[in-house]
Length: 107
Length: 122
Image (cartoon, rainbow over all chains, first blue to last red):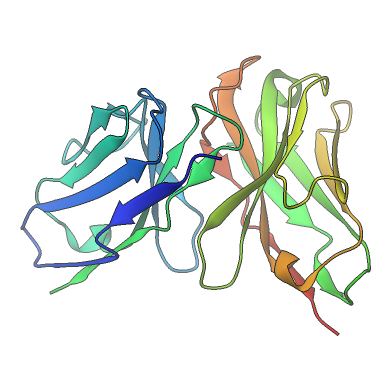
């Protein structure tokens, strides 16, 4: 099973600032990496797939990069609605596995 | 619009059984791979199982293999998860979820149901 790790566990950011979230895979997953946003009481929302492709309706301030084992989600200018938990997920191998998440909260 | 509505959760003793159902609407159900994904309270996400659009291909996480059975009825636009020999560690919200590939498994999820809570406790 591919183990996904995310850092940091919590990221405190002021509105308008840039947030950079990291995700690492225990072995190469190519570009088969997705990012989700989850707010309290809500289901996850797909942000990014294929490591860098924004899902339908996702604002341009969200961008993904990386390949192999190292990936990054960048939120260029945090809006108040962006404070949430963020999960990465690999889909190169079964079982598809999620990282433990990064909580982005207000500084 | 796409809707996925789960039912069947509840409180069950260790060793017991539950059957979860998911009613799908707003899309051509028999075109899509479907999955069950769970989230323990305050924890992260775990993929439990997925089933191909025709039902021919099925995968299970090692943690549930031999105890859980996924199935689908394309005529009724429904997805099920039969859970037997439940353990305390199976306690979670179980989400029905859709893969965006039509007839193909991309491997990620574009729509999630709100989930149904399964609590395994004596």
